[in-house]
Length: 111
Length: 113
Image (spheres, each protein chain N blue to C red):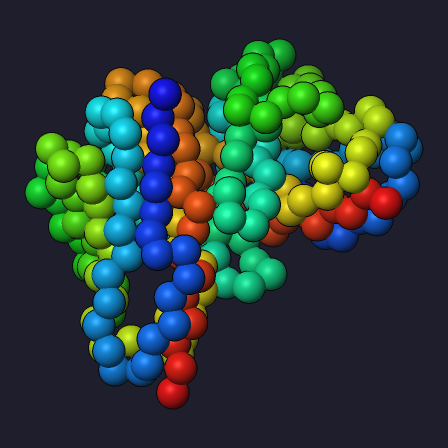
């Protein structure tokens, strides 16, 4: 069974600092998504990672995937208040239509 | 505008009173799905549909029903709601499945008293 563990679940950081959110999963996957959810809002797709070593970047967010370690990271560079949101990873089982979400990381960026 | 429309946005009801949450998409997507979101648990899939008249259980289907009579609509039915179904619900759709980008509705916050 595919299990997805995301940590930390809560993250409070100062503006300007860097931090990393981790997403570990238990079985072989060939596709991983990162989503953002603002309070009271729906989910917005940020990145899709398709292969080992894949790296995607947009603004202050960079996502990477290591399929051998079954690990994806979402790195935040020089955080700003606008990045405050909950971030989810979602892992698709290899060659399958089954997907599991992580529990989410609630990020708060303080001035 | 391409979108997934859910209604209602908020719903308060009492135990045992049947309710339906509607979901409609205008992108001609084959795949539609319902999730519930609970604190600390992320999103868990309730039911999904690969096409018209094709539906299947997700991880937490107990207490829910769905139907897919038309491609654009995928209503979620709670025949006899209970307090443990109090949750935030999301409908999502994609072209063919989770291997394509999912588009999410705005969510329905349900409270069952």
